Length: 150
Image 1 (tube, rainbow, N blue to C red):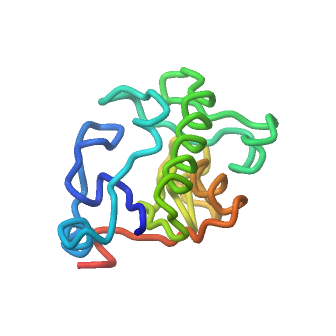
Image 2 (image 1 turned 120 degrees about the vertical axis):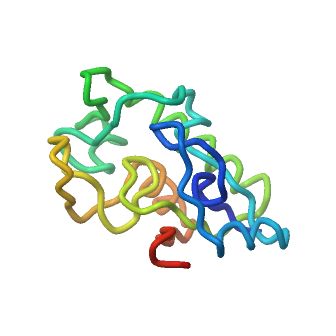
Image 3 (image 1 turned 90 degrees about the horizontal axis):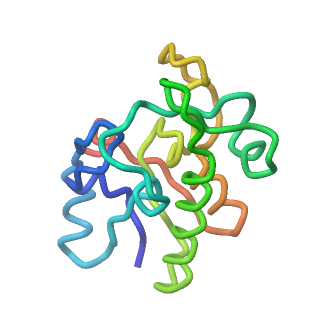
């Protein structure tokens, strides 16, 4: 069993209350190979909400208490993002998951790149909070996007 970002499976869990479905992701769930999840929803984030980005460092820095996750309107949502990562890991343990497909660019799920914390839509290399948390615990995190899978 694998976990896959819910927004890729048609779950309206993105920050803007929408989804970005991928045919392949939806098919994986339909075949019973994957479970959809959203670390931000697991952490208590409501939908919709202002965009959020990692500010002042990397996901690792956030997990070490050296940086924050902030919304564009100035709300500190670090606690919710960390809680979501912890709960995602608990799902992995419960279901014996060793591999997770995560939505690209997300401050929670980004695997290869995330937005730079200035809300200017500029990407920097790095991971989102859940991606970093899971990777640190030996879970294989892989990027997936509707544009790269379909």
